[in-house]
Amino acid sequence: MHLKEMGWKTRLEEAFHQLSPARGIFPARVISRHKNIYRVLSEQGEFPADITGKMKHKRAFPAVGDWVAAQLPQGQGPAIIQEILPRQSKFSRKEAGEVTTEQVVAANIDVVFLMTSLNQDFNLRRLERYLTVIWESGALPVILLSKADLEDRPEERKAEVEAIAPGVEVIILSTLEGEGLDDISTYLQSGKTIAIVGSSGVGKSTLINALVGEEIVEVQEIREHDGRGRHTTTHSRLFFLLQGGMLIDTPGLRELQLWEGEEGIDITFADIEELALNCRFNDCAHDKEPGCAVKNAIDEGDIPSERLKNYRKLKRELAYIEMKKKKGANKAEKMKWEKLLKGED
Image (tube, rainbow, N blue to C red; front, side, top):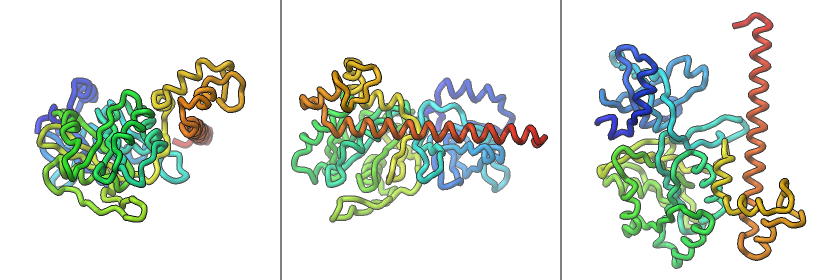
């Protein structure tokens, strides 16, 4: 497979040559990662891969979709990833748990298919959170309303989604009946990379099997009592499609905490941001202040109060994450200086 078919671009060529690669170093794309076990694909072939000790020490872990400079395998050993080439885009979240660490779910993506099913799991507030992360990633969001065969009023649901995502294409999808697949196919182009994200049980695996044309991903039924599914994908993987393009399947995300998102929030909640310009006070919190244009829009029924609550929630969450990151950076800087003062390397 040629590099261009895998998404190779001029900017990557320039970055690769700036490394002054030694003999045996080649460009490759990470197509799977399971914990710290990688597989890369290049014009030389597909190989298992590992990263250097230096990268492990710096916690510079490649993500699926990353372009890397790798060293050819020696004998039966793995290829060795030497460097991660600059990313065009990345879909990131804060790693689950108490740690303040970024988890890059997918890198170098052009489009993100945001899937949500038209069953009990349908949730506009969750969509707003996902949209914030997607806009921040630098990729183009496309919303897929899956399992349309289970919903009596899919067009009404579509209108609800379009109201909170102006300018974003919303596609009604029923993979079992073939509805929406033609609309999706317009995004499947040679050299383009699409990531599919969403909660577990929304039908990502079924869609991938339909697009690839064979059962390459295990599909499990959703639970009838709550419409939720189990995770059929436990780690991200990149697939090449017969009609052109690449598809990154991501694990069903139980939670999606922000890592960055200032720009993403501004785009997702552009209506609130625009109204805020007309508030009487520049620092209006859109709560009880007089002359609040946002509260007035809510009173007039132009914006649901739940949307403002979610906007505030995401703002608070982002501020908290930024505070934690700054605190962590200050701690690391302090430890660095303590080592220098002690004469340690």
